[in-house]
Image (cartoon, rainbow, N blue to C red; front, side):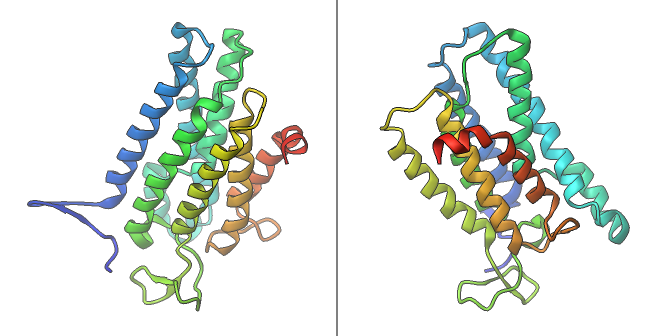
Length: 242
């Protein structure tokens, strides 16, 4: 298999990353809007809440991506400029969206927990997006460290690596199944989303140890440090849910 694995439709040759990213955004937003309609938030306020989440998510995704790859500023300036243009991270997007929504809800005097509507759409969107990351190969910089395991993938540099994108796909599918099972039990409003965030942040903190990223503090990357800060934010929910 060659990377990037371009998608051929007739005479068109499409790069997998923008294709799968666009599908991920479309599907997850559509599912989120559909589920959010069932919330107790007033109809005229729903769009404002989602807009707050989107703005916070975009800012968080971009800011954390820049901090994550600050080493490129000294070692590969061109790559850093490209990062400024197109770089983003899921962890930054999620936490940025959380704070964007909370700030918006505080402004609108909304006390209802709204996250449950977004847990499943985010999982589905992440699965689709990570498939695109895998098909993109080395340029996406989401691959793992070299490995001698039989499922190591050569993304084009003749070095078998952990396919961490696929690890995330498998984890998210498992989390989806587990959340559907857990949903049958009584839970507080917002706990579905809190549990999703706790699980995902813990997973990303763990999996990023086998990614060849810049690890400036205690052997951890900026994303891992942010994951720990996110888990501190959810510490009350962790004590109650785990």
